[in-house]
Image 1: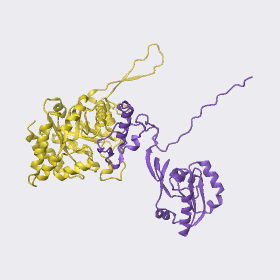
Image 2: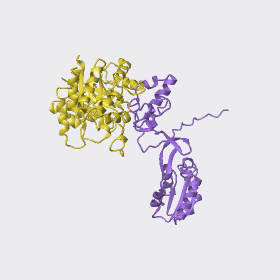
Image 3: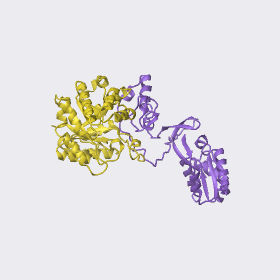
Image 4: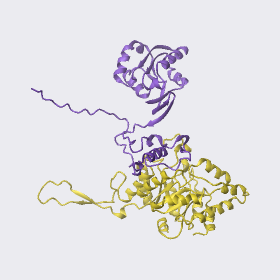
Length: 227
Length: 320
């Protein structure tokens, strides 16, 4: 999930200052789970903006704000409200902000949310970063713990000298040293050999932003009609 | 005598360390380096130590070289990607700087530019691989270094068939390749120590020819570590940071992971009068070296400006 948090309201207010009429959009996916742009947050934002003297022309919750077809469909349903607005306030991650912005090229889109990372929900309201979307997963080698993400120095060949006796990272006493976690897990499994082999410097050549990805669809085999 | 020769010899080896300043007023650094002249085999020059922005370590190494003092160029992976690190290494080579110490580097969040973005494109192991590759006439990506290979035209096939390869490369030509003495670090008192050993093995496999350790103040701990690291087969210089005061020792215990100063040493520093403090520090350093001399190849002294006391400690230890 894309872990995210709403920007400070003062910040949102500042960005919206030039616009009187606003359309507010949320998303049922990560934004709902992170309580940044679900139904409740969109309704709350509408109320708050109206109390501040803005005109909210309408609201919508996309099933997925990062899905072009969905954005197109929902936007058509709300066409009049969106056309009446001076700006669209989005309460979801940047992928959604840009999907919406690409469809509504003439209307300014104001981001009300900061996307933080790809992570795990420990419980509602508590999240931890787990994945860099690096494009070359090595979790098989490292016992299912990503050192690229969870080691502060993204080390791929073992720990630095900066772990404390209680197994924490010198950078943050609340964070476990990822390499000690990896080491202990693989030791328990009898798989330490996996990390004895040196990991070559990571090959980023296929993963420079901006990336695109397209399914490689196998060609359909022609099937001869059976007699 | 170069560090390489010193490490190959029978005698204990001592190395010192200087930290370049933030700014261009380097007089103190040159003075400290001067203190170490003929007293140590080489002087490490730190690389933006503690993640604090300072003058380039390579620039300071060049200056030391010109002064006739053997430098060890420390290279951390925090501030430069693989292009910059390799180009720095090549730059070192043309100034005759052979000794390079590969380190991960402290985290950027702990320094004076926490707003910056740390690089960590390579780690200490892959940086050592880069050093080794350059020595063999290639860069980390496998490209040939200019001049290090001779392009030879292949004879045309006599049967008139199409020639697939017109040239081949012969080499590398040793005198056109940089020479380095790659070194690495380890934290011998880290708990647990096995992950340190595992990484140390990788560093040696990647080409490390000597090791300088994080500070050690407990001979028994060093002995345990040396036993566990016996098989790696490269000379290990035990690190000692000069303890300038009881407060500093306590600070290191609380804030520097993998370093532990025992209470009896802190007590001695605390009991010392202000005038005696430096003397006590020298005594402690000399005693530690005497106690650990049989365990390792030598000592890396990190004096944090106390170069004269560090040299006095070496002399007081009576080991060289």
